[in-house]
Length: 214
Image (cartoon, rainbow, N blue to C red; front, side, top):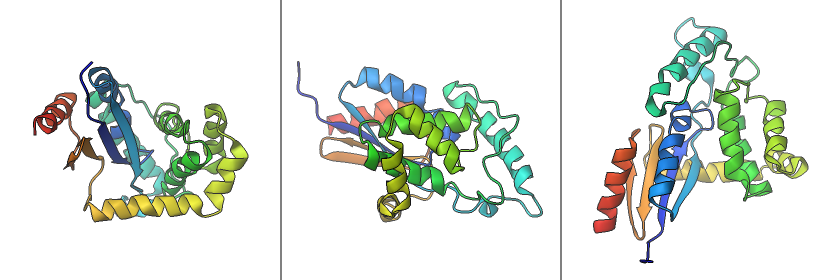
């Protein structure tokens, strides 16, 4: 079998993002084509405060409804169905996607082997099950469903270590000057390229093959 350089795709994202959820079929195809592929995830805190995305005089309930239509319009990207008749992701007490970002970092600390499965489950809880995953009790349900130790997770989530890891991710985002999500770093051996927009399976393959040739 010929030697294959390590291939890494790092996705800069937020667990609430429908665009990343719609990339799942693309990533599944890439796994088949490139058996050596490794996926990594950098938390990028899309919504620091929901007011940053709201229209003038728009209520949070109205924003949730508009956000649902944005999600639903994204289903053509990967062909995964999205239906959100009663999206309640944000409210007055839960105004940020910070809890979801912290949750992934806490999952990495509590159980690195299950962390990516947890992220996938968190995506599905948010987008498929339409659960308010900004709520900690909902996050804990996903923790239990994934088989991660709840006590360890809660400790890391609350004691500042998950926050420190998240700051590392956000510093990486700033260092690479990534301002839109999702974005990707594609690495093949010692060569790499950063893509600052959503791309197709065919584009991924084209870029990877170019990196392999250089």
